[in-house]
Amino acid sequence: LCFFSFNSTKKANSVIDSKGIVIVEKYKLEYRGNVKEFEDYILDNLRREQEQGQSLRWSKFVEVYARQLAIIQECPYPETESELGNDETPPSIKLIDQNTEYVGSFYRWGLHVVGIGNFRVIFCIHNYYKVVLLHQFDKKYNGAIRKEDLTPAEAEYERLCYEEPQRN
Image 1 (cartoon, rainbow, N blue to C red):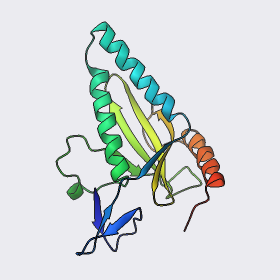
Image 2 (image 1 turned 180 degrees about the vertical axis):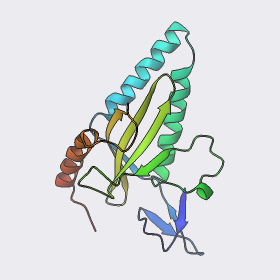
Image 3 (image 1 turned 135 degrees about the horizontal axis):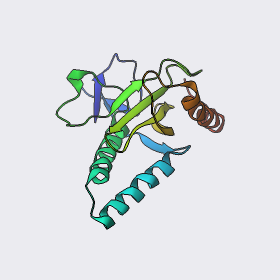
Image 4 (image 1 turned 60 degrees about the vertical axis):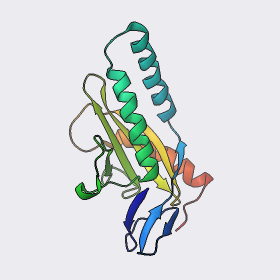
């Protein structure tokens, strides 16, 4: 469960306990864009690694990916150092604040694995109850995410908002 104080600006499917702590239930997870294909790519590489009896890079990556995805489904917001707890590899989540028309709406989940890739999954929290994975790419440069890497996520977000308008 994701805990944050009642006066927080974060909203979701939640209940408030007797001490004023908001307890968030699991967010619904929705895949859009190329994220399902990315997961298929991961699993194909895992199968290949297992068949060839190679090193366990992909096995380790799948474990980290699955654990972090479960954490994101429970608490998709960037955490402060004090909120991290004892998880060995918490998800690296950051609010995207440039190079997009939707500043404040998109988050990026970073997955850097030596010898595999430096992946980014762009997602949003839609209507306070679901995490929508919009687009994935392998970031091969330093600095802020470039506009051309955000454009597919923006297109998916626009389709999403047309199909299911944002609630305020």
